[in-house]
Length: 368
Ligand SMILES: *Cc1c(COP(=O)(O)O)cnc(C)c1O
Image 1 (cartoon, helix red, strand yellow):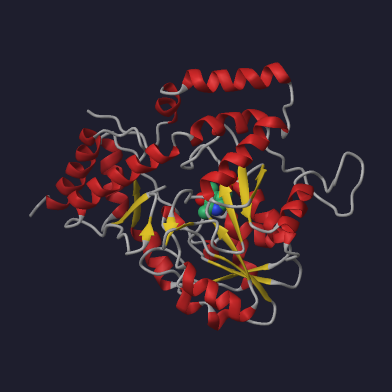
Image 2 (cartoon, protein in one colour):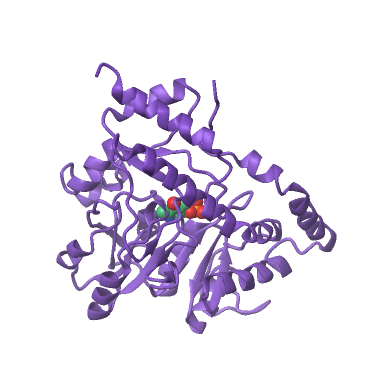
């Protein structure tokens, strides 16, 4: 029996271990473990990669979002619009900043439906956090037009979408500010927590650099309260190495996705690339009948799959006080029962992908 894990970090690192060890070894030799030269170098490389003026490396994607809200002064008494089908982090930071998360249903692409946003805007609405879920760009043009009309900040949650493009522009550089994660499971991954923020605004960049370092503006002075959200040099050294491979890894993800789509389009609902968008397939999500039974069958045959995410955020206990209930976001809720993420990581072979497809086709042709 073939064994296909959901993701293979050991395989990823085996291929580049020497390069990583040499980068790590340099850090040990110079001893600047927090921020330091590797972090600055990584920020500069990312700025070239994304075509963004400033990059601020932080401790996680969650902190990237949280500090962005802080940098724009969003907090108590404010409302922030986002999607209910994201990773919990997206809504969590809104509440952590003291503001109220306001959810808007998603479309068939699993991203926030821009048509439904305007009805939710009130005086207190200060920002929108569109999530580029699965690595597919959200509809940034209508979102930006709406934000402009209403004077809203747009914080892109690009945690799953590094390298994705919307009408030729990389996501994370289209909104007011862009947030990324370097979590081990993301497309560009550290060997621990990490994240970064992309901005075109020098003042915001300065504020973010203070916010990530307790509020210090130099060694001894401060004008704002801050946090400890510094990236460490080991992580920056490691992702600095991996950044060179990101384009090839992304191409491989897209190739894997195309293989799945070709083989599965008649068996289940496959993701669709719309004109003008480049999705980077952080996850390859199909919508299927009898999801849980299929998932168990795949697992029994050596294929691990996941559900991102089985419980919509508005239905989490933590959201009870906001008064949301089942039925509020029907598209998101229906998808939560049907979605299944298939392994799509770059190291998969065509034989692996074919094995997964055969199992799925076999499952649905039983008894026919
Ligand atoms: C992973 C993720 C985050 C949080 O990133 P961390 O680095 O794990 O804190 C936020 N939003 C989305 C959509 C994510 O997938």
